Amino acid sequence: MDTLMTKAQGLNAPAKYLYGVIGLNGRRAIAPLTSDDKGNKVYTIAYKDIACVVSDSTSSCPDPSDKEALIRHLIAHQSVMEKVMAEHTIVPIRVGVRLGMAREVESVLESGYGEFSKRLKRFDGKVEADVTASWSDLNLVIKKIAEEDPEIREMKNKVSSLQAKDNLAERIKIGSMIKDALDRERERIRAEVKSALNGLASAAVDHGGADEKVVMSCAFLMEKEGVDAFFSVLDELNGRYQGALNIKCVSPLPPYSFSAMDIRKVGYEEVILAKETIGLGAEASTDDIREAYTRATLKYHPDTDRGNPALGHRFEEITKAYRLLKKYCQGRACSFKEEAFEGFFIVEPIDPH
Image (cartoon, rainbow, N blue to C red; front, side, top):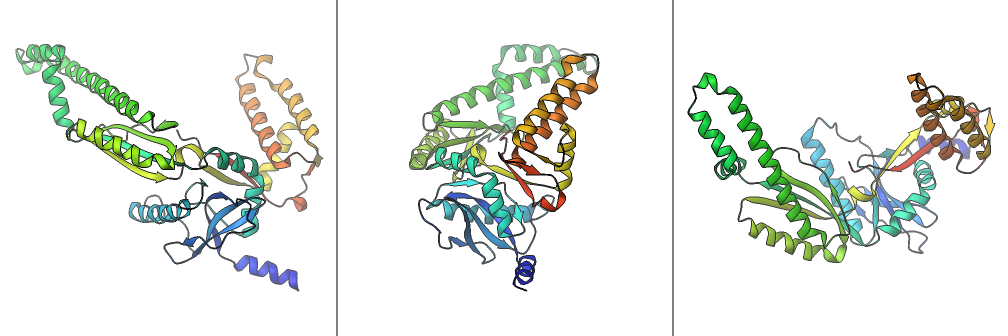
């Protein structure tokens, strides 16, 4: 009866919305940290000396196509993260991850324990600053380039002396020359801004530009105590460009661009497909998995028949299956019987690019 009651309570329990992972710093538990935008308590679920920051969630994340709802969600998410960051270093989890029950969160912490612990140590006391620099008036920049570049000026003079029907090729060339000059100017300014900021940061990730007006979009990693000095340099840069460049910064942020983690639940069918791909039985040790992988790679390595492109695809499938099974077995013997399968999570870093 007690077991049935526990299962029923688990089925009716609200989902857990995940924010990130913090260290317990020798404590066995942490009191509720804050509340989310719906008034739900933000608390922790612990495993060993780390804990996942969660809140109870009764609604799904907004559809990405609903921009306004998505922005509200991101603002609410970031509000919680800022409150947690006031007291803790946090390794962020991809925005929008929800799990069904507390025991699934514990399974995630177990699967990713090594990676979470390593990142908590590496990013202790560090925060992210996201910097964007955009031209205030792109047309004015283009006009200035066209007036000051001697080659463009010469080509424009040539075009003006021709009939409109005869100057199409020259006009296309002028457009290409202006674009090249604009790209060079963008690179020059980007290098100048980064040079001024890099001394205050230990790492940087370039996110590229969303449109032609964007000169740079970059994330910088720094010590939390260095944020004020970072903003001071940005103020100096804004003054240097006298309004021609609009530099904005959001900080302090969790190190989203440097340590954010993704979580993916792996189903039984995916594990069985991986098992069959490298040729395993109903049970296998880590040695069995490694030996089966070696046999399969020797058989299907692309070098064995360079004229057969299907081997390359098969080799990739074998490698992917091996990596999944290594994570599933976690250094122990494992069963591939369905009744023994309890769920499995892959926890891995998000590529910032």
